[in-house]
Length: 294
Image 1 (tube, rainbow, N blue to C red):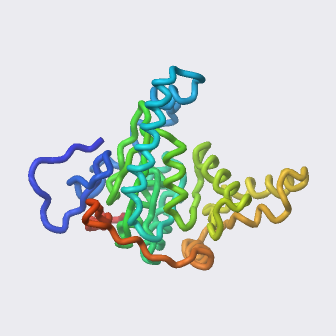
Image 2 (cartoon, rainbow, N blue to C red; image 1 turned 120 degrees about the vertical axis):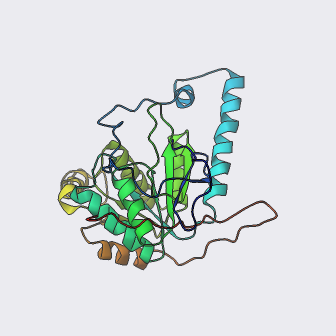
């Protein structure tokens, strides 16, 4: 995780959050050798943390299980407090492996910027690749840029374009936050984790656990086989209804994505924080000037 440098920031300089969800001083943009993908993450297998393994490996002692329940509850409460005041928000998903030079990275950056200009905060997993691209575009559009990280043994560092960054130990707590505080999902090409989020959210919409929640896939060449599989295999086999694939929109245009989201998302204002309870709304940070050619 990035360390807090000594001394105050200069006025108007950007800040990067530290892992506890607070905002800490940091560098004004990516490091010189930064290419949009972490050098620590080239196709690595992500092991579960000891805490999550303890939850999933079967019965443990009653005392251990009770302690874990309280830790899970505490993680939910911390997430609720950190994200309660962010206002209208859209979550962007996609692979951590795309580099700045690749087209999907630039697509994520463009949609992040357009979402910010449309008045939405942008939330991602807080890491590199598509996540970084969307947060970067959000900063460039002067929006509120958020990251929800999952703590793993090979810990990913937060990208340098975040106004608020929160660590979670449990995938399911993180998933709740990503849905609860979002008005829509924008999903760019990604792997198993991206597909997991896509289909879990589609299930929530299909079963009406959540409503007025558009799911927009960007990168039509990548997603077309997935939609065809739904129509030709799943619908044909009767495992989903003929209208279910229509819950998911596909486009390559950031402007079209914004139109779909605005048409389906109800307008609402963020709750006001209470100073009595020690609450504060997250602040948007200054955006570094783009590097030549960026």
